[in-house]
Image (cartoon, rainbow, N blue to C red; front, side, top):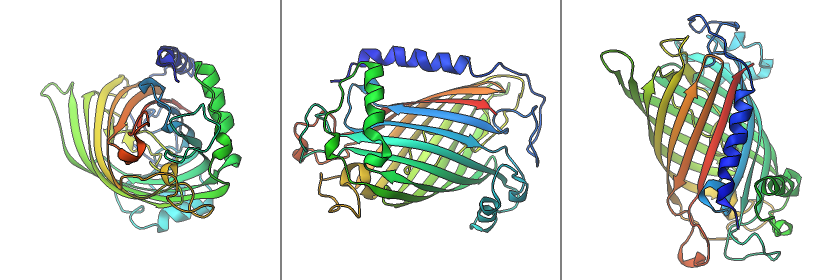
Length: 367
């Protein structure tokens, strides 16, 4: 079993990394424009982002167990043609994909590599567990295209990688478990078979309201979101609502955990009203998803019989709460994510957790 008491040490490691990333620099107020500048705020400049997702904080290790992602976001530009960080074909996709070249919207490209891992409840067993989710690992690269302003957002992402032994899921999980003093998983010989992983995701958000107090020291907003995923990692459609509240909030939309193949890795934010000041705010979201395929519970599409592992609920609700602290040069985000029951409760009487619950920690720093 996991040892939840190791969570504080994990948080301390992340805080230490974050503090040592870079020293704070005060930036002059700027507006998004073609080209990058060292004076631009973190929210509009080129940046690196590292994220780690793990369910250790909830004392479980089944279903979605661990994920990580390292991402590079381009600066905010006014045209796809001026994104010098992106190859020519990436700029061409941005110009031709419906909605991503709408006038008045800013542009941003993202490039990442990441991994997700899913395991059954009984990780001590070396045998295949017939009434639980399979061992799954996915290792993939992603390219995202983003067009947005303070009220509207459109994003498209391509995920391409591998699943099965070639994803190195077993090695990755064992490293994490040894670092946290958790039980080493013994059943990876029963993981899904090797297969190319491919997903196409589209996300749209529209702000419904925003406001601030009379002094302008606190602000709030809310947005409606909808997304579609198509591929052999995840195929689903969802609709949701998100809200933010806090001091000196960046304009744009809430930052969310980036799960490979499931949630697009985006940064649809612009500099806050006071560029020289830090930002502290909270976010909350609620969404409802209808899954046609979920690799983490159904197994692979082409290498084995679809859905042979476990019965899954087609409709699932997800909720998250986030805390965000940002300076002009770096940022720290933490999210707690929970879901309704994802699996058939009657068929999983001995399963330790029928829901997906995990903690997500994200670090950002200017390139």
